[in-house]
Length: 426
Image 1 (cartoon, rainbow, N blue to C red):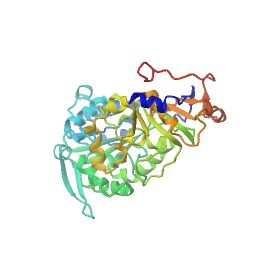
Image 2 (cartoon, rainbow, N blue to C red):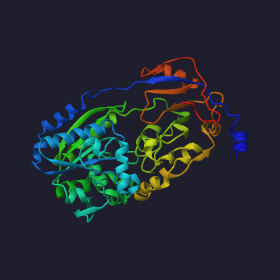
Image 3 (cartoon, rainbow, N blue to C red):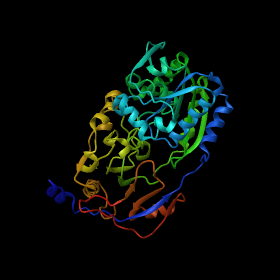
Image 4 (cartoon, one colour):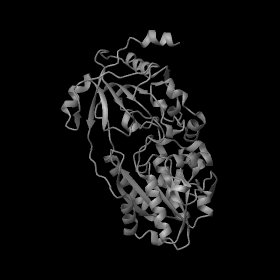
């Protein structure tokens, strides 16, 4: 098979590349613990929790900047007030939809009992605390419901990868899907992505009313994956205030400035990068029909999975081609629970698998339509989070030089280097 692949794609020339620097607005919080303390003190939210109260603090599965430090700071402030905090994983069906898997995800994010000095109590069991006016059941983590006097929710607020609305990824979603575990996630997704934002709002409103959620800590990041805003919201303000935080988060999103190019090479993807492995908001492709594809690029190539994703390749269906190296790292028991819960199966489809990185890139070039194969417009990124320094082919240089937000670091293009097995030398 290797020979036939070489015969079919081996003659496709991979263009030499040059590194360019993309710049974005960069507000940033330098003293994270001080910002957390200030946000909570301004609203006097810690004071709402009585001395001696047992407090369940949510911890999600996303790769969030400073999440271990932020969570540890909240825990410390609760302890200073005489409360007894513990951590509960709040990640729906992630981590293979098992208690052990979710605890392992937290460990990969630096959230451990040793690091925080408090227990992590992981369970997939939920409690139904009532129903909505439309008879939807209300689920919440059983330990947070039965064994905590108060619940604190922490999450990054950002545009979602599969739907649009006033409530996407954020505190409300953490309450409904994160703390709702697999059952809450499945319920929220049951009517399709077109209804997700409305479902999140309806369920979150009732869960806030019927549970002991005291406050949420909403985090916004800049284009450089740095914390730029920390907002504390009492439970009764979450529904009203979160849409404004989502608008702010959307304004801070990074991007690939180039549009209408031929090939995007992504060195790595994973759940720690985006819920969909490679952020659809960056690549312009989406996993559901409710989101309109931007068609910025003809072919997307994925070369590897991150170690932190633990074999979860959710989102690989957005790629056209992947390397065998990436394919062999897929753990289907980690990858499929999310699709089986949400009903979004496109994100876990397997792209064309080529023997190595070189062949994967060559296959992408060969299969482009209406393109000058000697002047391929190619962009290479490490992942969809790190978009400051990227590589482009010579055919994109004129466009780069016209953009004031792009700096060409070296006019000298250089070929990609591959090892004896045909994989990129990073």
